[in-house]
Image (cartoon, rainbow, N blue to C red):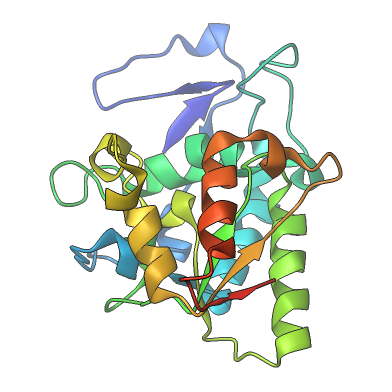
Length: 220
């Protein structure tokens, strides 16, 4: 991907070099396969800790070349320690998966070689920094003595962000989120310092499902 500031250039775009002193080229081959692995059921697109570590390492090298895309700080340089999933969606997930399978694909599908059924479903808001998100999963794995190949279902990486509406229906129990929860052995709630997930209706739905007596998984 070629970009300048918050602008991502497309094939037919032209740039006046005099007006833009810094052009940034980002090569996503470090985290993606040459061809995507089609995983039809979104619920089976868990991401392993090994793969997530690879994503975070890649972000650590590219973050300072990216700019804030939201709010009052729009256009300012990002820092790795502040880089969250909203930033990842714009700067990594969508550009790294664009062009695969006609309408793009999920990030998991460009990293995996086969379906990856989730062991744990992660409920969280996108607002926490990626590095802290990984730290939470690493601590969870340490406490529960999980293998590095343990797969977590994380919506940002599992859903095709180019057509995410296909995985979100009017009935929450018909979504990939719900199916992934049913496949998983438990739900891991990742909190930021403000407890943001408790203020998000979708996260509250996930917690309510996790707490139902009919669901026999674990809550962490």
